[in-house]
Length: 247
Image (cartoon, rainbow, N blue to C red):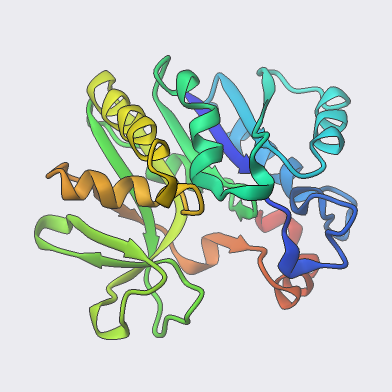
């Protein structure tokens, strides 16, 4: 199984911290970076045989970090040359040919997870496309909200879903298993990328389009305490004060 990490964005909402540094290379109090915590968490689960990082902004810094990083599985970089004029759907497209080779997980590059999370979301199902969700008492405007239907079917993902239609939050971590599911997912990426309307869209629009085609998108839950996202300056302060042994 492969792990794809979307780390091409400029992280402008965190300027000046990210003015000269990719968001994924922001550091914790012990000097380790968001990217390193993602990699270590993935490796500890013994689920992955390869990690592919999709870069763009300040890619050379991430490439240098990976060159100096010694891991027991291969870690590769795929570059999105359009990072400055597109969103992370295009980043997913730059790696789509790798996605046909084996089952995979795909994650946002600004998330960190407790070591148990990757194992929690794995499934025995031979074929599936699954997103990861959590439940909150209240959802804010920037949350990637989720509407659920019968049998846990995901019916919509998006930031603009109204509160009364919101059932959960998308964590930004997905699992794609089985040859049929991989082909569906990759074919959808290729289809959407041909439409200029989608160049500025989030990669989670892949699921919305698959849902429109009648594809069953499942979900699995993790706790809000199982993960953290770094999007705004207060998130950085929280991140820097996390009890590191928990992540």
